[in-house]
Image (tube, rainbow, N blue to C red; front, side, top):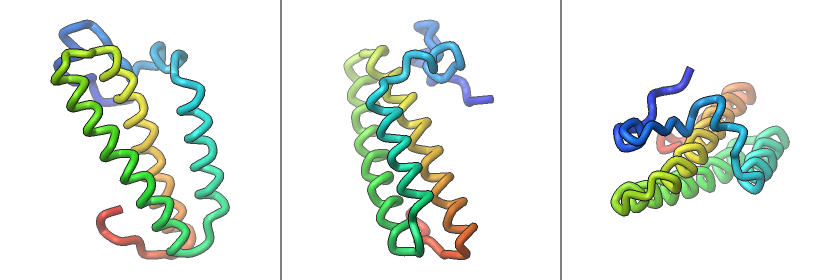
Length: 111
């Protein structure tokens, strides 16, 4: 189960993180996520995982900035698609940590 959508989207009746909404995910985003997951599966050692994590953090921060702008501009459709992207990026962060644990590698706190 996922967290409820932000209040701005609740008021518009949108739930971009629902299973019904997931069928409209941008194919380019899905391809990017698949590529990063492959990188994680091939990563060996701390440096490789940190590099992937840093890149993911950059994407997360950029997405958060874009989300703030979308909400400020009352662009609910853009905000909804960014929330979906953020959900995938959060999952990537979890997968990086799981792989680090599997490899018995300590990651920096900011990852």
